Amino acid sequence: MKLGSSLLNTKEAARVLRVSEASIRRWSDSGLLPARRLGPRRERRFELSELEHFLGNTPGNRQAPLHVPPAVRIGGASVPLRSHFAPIYSTDAGGLRLSVPFLADGLRAGQPCFLAATGPVLERYAKALTKDHAIDFEKATGSGRLVVMAGPGATVEESIANWEDKFAKALAAGATTIRVVGEMACERRLFASDADMMAYEEAYELMTRRFPAVTLCPYDAREFGGETILRVLKAHPDMFQQHLGLFLS
Image (cartoon, rainbow, N blue to C red; front, side, top):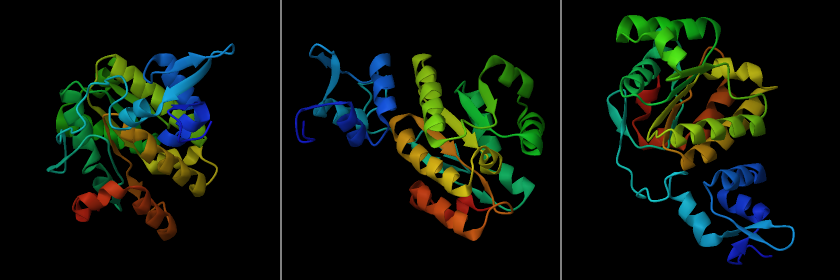
């Protein structure tokens, strides 16, 4: 079957949506992506029009309007859902300037929040949320409103599959906005190299467009070289839709 056909197989659907075949099967099995079963082997087939509709809508909410007004504020600026930014900082305080208020606002609004951080970095977040924003950190994590983890996985495929699963569950529970902070100096330790970490970032950039999420991936400039930082900027095109200085601390 050629890609121009109306009905596409799993491999072709994955190419259209720019995701893995495993993602297509997972979305189909969960009912997020309509599929037909054809032939004695009950193979999946997907309508091209359904895939195009899926690209413009949130999984799990097929009737959502294509235009979603800005719903989240970062550093005083309104940003749309499905945004993905990489704040770059050079001091401990600078690393918290955008991401801590971003999480605090989400927790107060009852939105699911995810924080990938470990060790002293995580301790700084817990202290700032508690002291500066009156957030009960232990209560927030204990209730599941704030999910803290070292990172989503050690490979690109594992990481993207884990995020898809977490986001799909949040949507199934009624979430309309998801907030993510991934401290990349912490997540980096899960990957074999900076190149693998950046491949994950690039895959995440494509995946997150299908969910009502806003993501901050802070980079500690003291931990990364100039070549990696340049690639970081290229992997986060949303940075250039805002005032770039907003994301530098």
